[in-house]
Amino acid sequence: MSQEKTFEDFFGILTNHEHLKDNESLSDYTIHESTEYEVLMRIFEDVYINPDDTIVDFGCGMGRVLFYCNNRFFCNVTGIEDNREIYDKLSQNAEAYHKKFMEQEYKFSLLNIHAADYEIAPSDNFFYFFNPFSAEVLESIINKIMKSVHENLRQVTIILYYCTYEMISVIRKFPLRLDEVIKLPGYEDDPDEKAYIYRL
Image 1 (cartoon, rainbow, N blue to C red):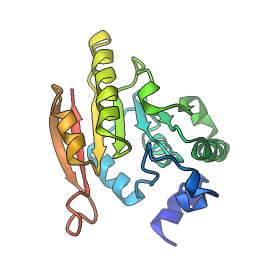
Image 2: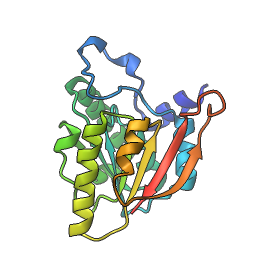
Image 3: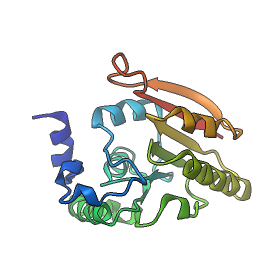
Image 4: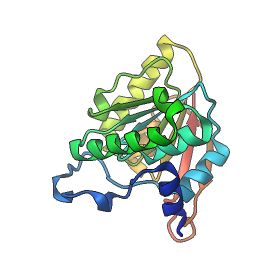
């Protein structure tokens, strides 16, 4: 049994985008692709989340990062997904997951909105981006994060996976500290297989 299927069966979810009925209906607002579990395992060996922390996944798709982080750290998770078809699948996954892990249901927040429309909550302190949208949208979101931190002082961690040069250029406009660059499985063949960990 593959590692992907092992995790999916354990969580009781389906996050492979091949399960979508009508891929032509997907907008180009986000890249609709799930982070491999092997990659998540490697990233979160170095990034530790406490149970009272909240990770926000912008362009969360069918929720793989949310379910993985909640199950590993028992943390709060917020998923932002603008595509209605994918959001419906995300909701189905959440329903199935909560049947197996009922005590974690209150730690989930799922929103069917554009990423740029999300208002950063004072409790949000981890932010996950898998190359999900344009540099302009990313800049808008980072501005909101910075404003939120100014209003409610706290340490925040931003995780950028498989990001473009344009995304890195946006990040460099802000007073964020690059703490680590994690080389991920497949890096030898594809140098973009990295996760950048920024903190403020």
